[in-house]
Image (cartoon, rainbow, N blue to C red; front, side, top):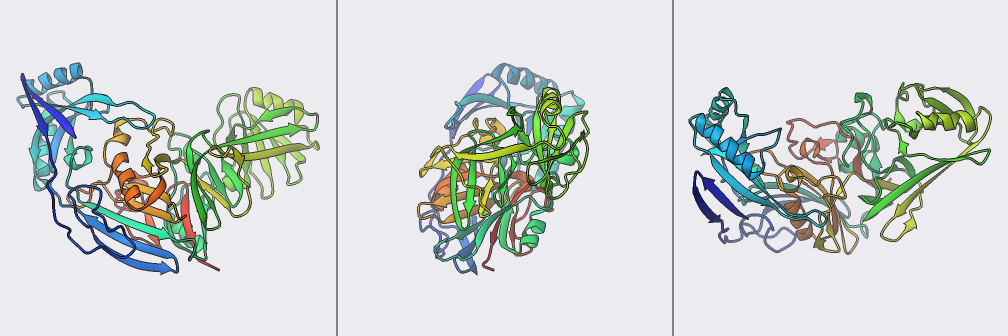
Length: 489
């Protein structure tokens, strides 16, 4: 990557090249025999283990620590800004008695979002064992009224030598005799650890699933931000066009998805159900299933309780339980009026649910074997890097360029499921990956299509009952859903 450093009036153009390096280890059987795609060329140090017939587990390490710490100025919570703002901040740093460096960088274009030029204001550079000195500079700047942070340079998305710590599971459906499953744990609303979900299903292995809604009411923060199908039941609606991982038995594919839920009253009136198992927006009709795991929201709305046959057994104020074998239509505003007019006690309401594969324009059969994990970002399509950050709600510099822990899933041309976790936020040990690096890693592992699941502190891989990677929070985080590999029964 090319960066321009501006110090005062001087302009210096720097081009960093990565030196060649010999292979550091013999290839491990089952892994690519080509050089690791990130950092310096070479074969990663790796080990392999069989978890079951057709299920292989690999650990990989590659690279060496070379990055240290700097201090980055922060404006409105961001460490990048316009050139004019950078000049203003650089002047403030100089007034504080320190020497600033203005770094110009380009956030590369992705498949659906253009490139952008930005500027950072940085002060100093320290090796890993002198982080405390950088922290003293942050304090000095704070005393001068300048907001700043200690910034590990391996995180910024610029050229690095690593290192990387990666764990990979490859499942060959031609040999494996188990199945893939999705789990939302004991309830949709509640977050749960991957270890707990894996233990409940007696899974061979598991990883965390898609993103979940941390901006809703605290009691509903386990709700996936995109589609979720568990055992053939649609439990969270799709964000139309976003990519998901469709699992049926021991087959897996990646595709764009949409979903629809409609309610039809006995008098012929119809209404769109725009949400599932989440907090409603104004005038929305939302449906809650027994998997919600808690009472519905108390928001002044109206609810119709529907039994398994579609009969309305009760019309009530919002804020009640969802009993086993029932569903609850919950309306606020105009949707509450619709329920009052068309959902009388003792009448029937037919609810129809569809999930559409947008690549084939066909409905996906919602059988007990069908599981879908969404809340993802497209990385690879048809063997080529295709990062759909804008469509999938992640078109920002932090997500596209900076390195984070990642949970990745892909499918090879032969139908193998490839799951990888890249640990990060551990200076000197592992740097994580950007979207581009995650795509390159999955292509190297043979994925023809690949997605980025939730990452950061959520990234966790479980083998049996144990977390085998190193979550960046220091402990395993409770998450919204999980992808399970379950052995033959």
